[in-house]
Length: 364
Ligand code: NAD
Ligand code: ZN
Image (tube, rainbow, N blue to C red):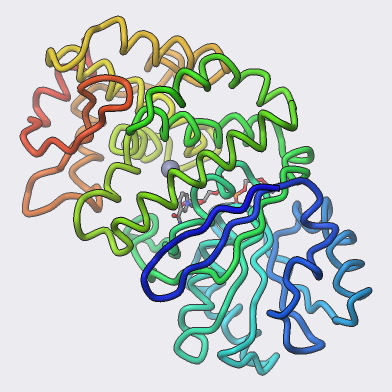
């Protein structure tokens, strides 16, 4: 098992990465679960795969799990589910010192974390991420949110978990497509500021996705450490450092918006193609050699993620995609900061990018 500290000022916590953490969840949470009743929020897919395992561990330790099993999918991050879940927690008489368990992917983590941030003005929660995306990205860093008619993740809070338990065994029941999509966020850490890690991914990514346990532990632990480092440097996204985590996301979000945030394109798939586009745009602007951008495209394509726009079969042009970017929540006083690359592992925030030029690039 790897233990990665997240050294944020107010309340540091740790991320444990290993196999079998779900089956021993009661031991892993020892000292935190003060009462017999333990609220566990999850979705029906995760409950079907792991509910019995968790239930057994908690009951053997003398606890009585109180399950809230939500519908899987992005629509669960809603005002309605926020209200219903908060009311449910209040009916359970959750107190500030209690811990709520968030068991699932980013949807469950984001919703549960937001509930925990507002119940009694903030109570504790434990992230138990069960998707690769949630393990390497959303469970660490304290961003929580719901979606509204105006857009995704526009309402939320910074609220850090008190512990993160990333069980690699959970990945065994995750659909291959979700696993691959989460892998895009792993590659992202290499492209941001860690060229040796990108090289590791290029060499080992396919075997890691195929199930090699040692490679999985290394990939998740290394990614968590990267995220923890960036978050510790910029907990509330004020210095610009944390913005680096959005590499590929401006293009990616535009593609997601174009597909109506449907299952036609998963978030990680949009990010994968978004990183390729960011790399190619950077090469076109003379910032880095075209061969390096093609190294990125080759690896993304080799693991079965989309590496060019044609692969998506979308019926839209550059102008249409740029129109979506204008609604990006990173828009700041009329300009959209763009993450570009001076090389693999040399991502930086460029405030001079012309969206007109981006539209031309997308049509080339
Ligand atoms: P998700 O939570 O929807 O999970 C994907 C699918 O996998 C769901 O159908 C789920 O039921 C199923 N599933 C989860 N774990 C499983 C398991 N072990 N076995 C079988 N099935 C399983 O999606 P996600 O990709 O984990 O997260 C996406 C969400 O995360 C988005 O809402 C996004 O906005 C959010 N996000 C948040 C942050 C952050 O910093 N807070 C960062 C990135 C993404
Ligand atoms: Zn992402």
